[in-house]
Image 1 (cartoon, rainbow, N blue to C red):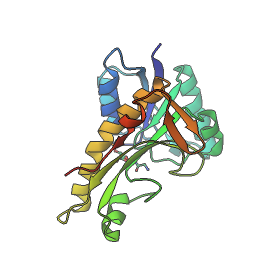
Image 2: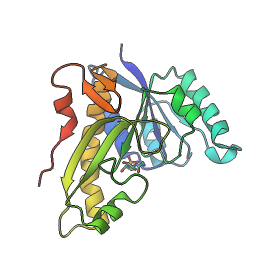
Image 3: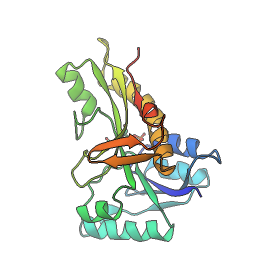
Length: 215
Ligand code: GAR
């Protein structure tokens, strides 16, 4: 059985596109059963709809607080019998209550090599620090922002001529590769978590989850 997966977005949705494309082959162990957004105007939402995927907008602005918003979202996810959640450019902090509902079943992609550069403006900060290697991370979500067991990472070089935009584009290309790989392994049950470490339950899984820097 393919795991029923929802993607949560707030905007553009290019990682959403990559996940939908990967899951469009029948042997992929997850099916994208829903795309939901806290922003009704999110570009990705209209695109998902045009692809025939169920969509939902749960506008956070009409709720009194975070948990009220999340309780509505949770009802939508339950109605679609969602088993796995992928945050893909979902720009809302989640309460411990919501995170607990999805412990071990919710992934996030972050545009930096965690635990470096949690939070926003990761590319700008990496350039300002002069680091030579940057990248992206897929991790299980825990209540602390941008923490949680790391499922996959990809590294890219930082070049002398880089601007925030060129570096972001190089990282994004890798995001689109590692997120589907990570979802495939999680949905297939090919990984186990020991403390903060995500290990391959089968040989080969771990090798698929580290992408070295290349020029
Ligand atoms: C991606 O770069 C993703 O890593 C980042 O937002 C972008 C969304 O792009 N996420 C975060 O910064 C979360 N803290 P997309 O909508 O085209 O996938």
